Length: 469
Image 1 (cartoon, one colour):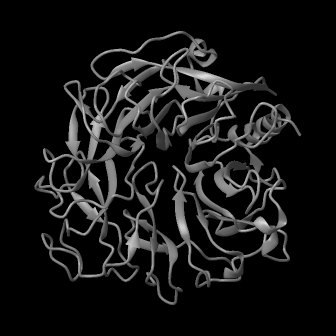
Image 2: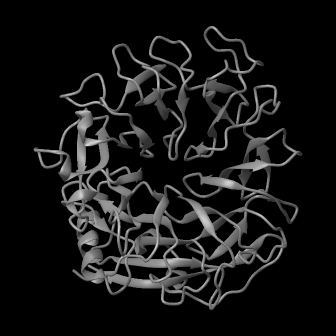
């Protein structure tokens, strides 16, 4: 199957599912492209740690390249690209001065971006900021109710933000608020991972999310990518200790901040107390209905082929509404010994999952590649391919993202053969987006633009392939 037919398969699989969430024209075009600073330009540094807004129009990432907006900062900055207008913004900037920004995440419409920074102006060690791209305001998110920054800094793993930008989730060993059996203003016990907190940027209040079902503090939980639902009500997390009675260790959970309940996610009808294998990288959909996570087939959660682990990709999908868990099958192009080889994943509101999987364990082309799984459409299909259907010649999918409708996807890739014009020897951001997601078709088709001033520029999509159904 060539690249065009692969994407045509994806068009036909995605659109019927997406009709549930949004109106999609019968004729649909998918645009597959690399993000670049402008026509005829390439980023002069690496771009990584990607996220996409729920509406699919804004892509954010961290980059060492300083030609996105023509700034002079040497280091990593948080960047936002509007796929509709081509406007590029250095988000980790104030008054035109760019500073360090890592792990950016975006609100549903791209207005707000939260990111990690090390900047003494905002507190010790790592802190979390939220940028209002409409007003330019920067606010400290890793702060207690009195507005004081996390005394010991936030963890440098990741942050998450709600669709309206009101809630920001982060992790820190600083105790940011009173919790059962623990007073605020102290440090978490030695050996603890720290607490997972959700900050209300409107009221200033902050709540601990890493709480067991009995109301006690869970000291060994970790926040991962795509952890906060669109409303900010649900938080997915990975906990080493049992956080519900009878659960096995190292499982995925969802905390309901409204109902004050904690739910075991990594379970199935055959393993009601959780997997016998450790779980990794839980990711929640914007609606909070679906959670994807990594787990080995021998954990007891089920087999995609009904027989054994060799049919599994290593990623499971939990439907919290239906109460079901399925094993996502191993992609047909993966060798049989590459079962359970998939790791990072992101999930949409229709249950489609973008995932990163090892294409082969050794030899030529033994790089992780980016795949897409759509429920009911069979095994995952590889996305990170050239127009000639060849896999990328280097790793893809260390981070990846998908929007609410499943029609806008983004991932980072070190491959240099996907875009024939790729010569920067650096990691780039690639997008696969259905044209109906974008309103400015001129930009979707590509147009000439130039670097701007004061942290704002204009960019372009460097097309790899365009597919119609």
